[in-house]
Length: 477
Image (cartoon, rainbow, N blue to C red):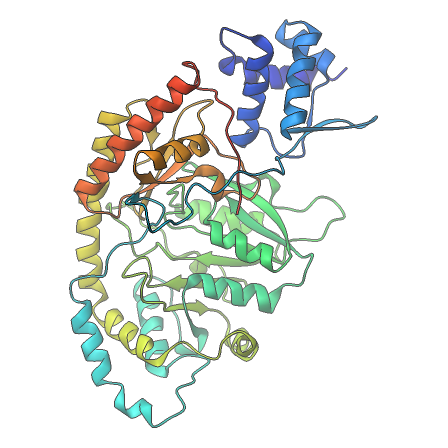
């Protein structure tokens, strides 16, 4: 009898069990624990007998609850092997699928409109284009002047960089894909934060690597599982977002950055995603240096982009790495693409020359919109607990124990709002009690969207008979 396992599960279930049908409450509670990530998928759970004793209920109550969870796909049992948690294989349709016929407020995209000076910057770039037209227009490493401008930008931010350490990409995600293509083989172990930006996980899955999670919350990284089990191979790569992590907003202090690098195996290459680093909105007493400052360019590879800090319509980013790796990536990229477009690189160069003024404009606007979103949430969804990140573009909202962001997303669409459930930001369908809300739209749209979300949440609660522990419909993509 594993009393410890049963006691721990009973302790987690306690706050989720209310009045009414007890076996329904047990199954709903366990389901919520799995979807919130507090019960790891694949973990063994207590036997029906042990859990019934720990909860003080009949064994038949737990048996009915376990049977329901097996039918739904949240538990699997092997003869003689016990019962383990699982993620359902049957999935509902994505609630954020685009439908141009619907007039919806879209909160699924964390991106702003272009800055007011963009036409001027494009015109200045076009004026620089004629000398390049006579050539072939292919620059796998990037235009020399843009590589130098990126190196200067990174140096000004605290990461000394030479131009030969820079490869120009079509965004940070493109850089991540190139690194997966260059440095991994199918079956290699790759560490990715959970929750994380969905496309980071999608790209890793497309390369058929084995994804292992690094838990992250607004409080920091959970480093307990970054080292491999005895006898297992170390991870080849670790994708880390140390600055205003998407979606949790975690901004790692210097000590946490050092601790992370010390905890990871020395052979694991660390990919520092700095997509949001330039979007610090609050004054930080001791701003940490970039993650690459704490490790050599042979170990810490930096990817960055202008798509979040400036405009998503401009697909220009970079990889900062040791020069030999930069050349290796450039050689290998030709099977995927030949170069970043010349005109876009010239626009990016103009942007970087005016980056300080552009970022000041963006930050002022984002502070206003962040404040308005949080005020609206306090008024129309007072039971929710939104984060107030020091930077970035999103708030990570805790809907409360037993709540389902998946079901909310489905209902919200009927109220005229598109949102992405928390399950989309994990590769095992957990964190269903969380919702990512960008504060990138104009303030009036944000307020209207939150009003509609509040109405949708009340409808979900009424549909559940007043219970916050409605079974969610899980989907992944």
